[in-house]
Image (cartoon, rainbow, N blue to C red; front, side, top):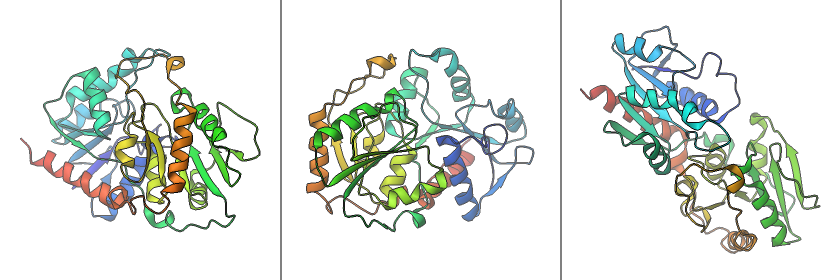
Amino acid sequence: MRVCINNIEGKLSNLNIGPVIFAKRLSKELERLGINIVSKNQKHDILLVFADDSNTPGKIDESRKKGAKIIQRLDGIYHTFDRDFKKENEPIEECYKKTDSVIFQSKFNKKMVENYFGKTNKQNFIIHNGVDPSKLRGSTKKNGKNIFLCSAKWRDDKRLYSIIEGFNSFNDENSELWVLGEPDYILQKGNIKYFGEVNHKKITSFYNNSDFFLHLAYDDSCPNSVVEALVAELPVICTNNGGTKELVRNSGEIIPEEEYDLKPYALEDIPFVEEAKVREALVSCLDNRGKHVFPREDLYIKNCAKNYIGAFQKTLDSK
């Protein structure tokens, strides 16, 4: 089977963003499992399109003419009033209408897309992201403190303010909060440490030196950082919004809040997570240490890639 992936070459391939990071992981594992990953100019059976065709304009039509099947892999879609989300969604929706089948990252991702683009009658699959466990399961933690880690490209919907204020209200002398990424909110406290942007190759040491992971994003579909944390066997604290709770399941603590109704919103209207609820979840993590469900082999990149191969084959077999 020959597969072309549209965002591992060209202008997008050097960007340090979630879809590109995951595409490269997936490509490497597919090749290890015997799939021939080819460039856009080589003959292929499957064109896997991440979001839309903007990185390889016209490639969908060209590939179809040459007999290839087209699969769209959907990440999040635009839905906030700080940008012209209808216009920015146009190329994604156009691709959604053209493809033979669709891979959604999560049930929430599918629900969101169908709310904006309409339900699909094509073959569709829900496949969570995956990561190689080989470097993420060997804790080197030595300082004896309870380390709560959080990591993201911080913006309003990631709710760093709620993480920090919730942790601050926790007020446990034996716990620290480590923040990776350029923060959009800073509280100067001795037990809150800011590390700024961290090279992705070095991030594994932070997972391996931590005990728990915090991710209170409002509507993430399938955050890579949470997949990494779970494969590193860190219990994850999240809310019941977005697709994160689908990943976490019994491997962490889920904070209840009013469910997002999928309608467009302004970033300043994103609700804060109550400090008391965050504090309760932190306490629960400590109380339930060792009781959360691990390992999470369902999120290993090998099993993720096998699910993609299954989707490829079913798409090729369809008329």
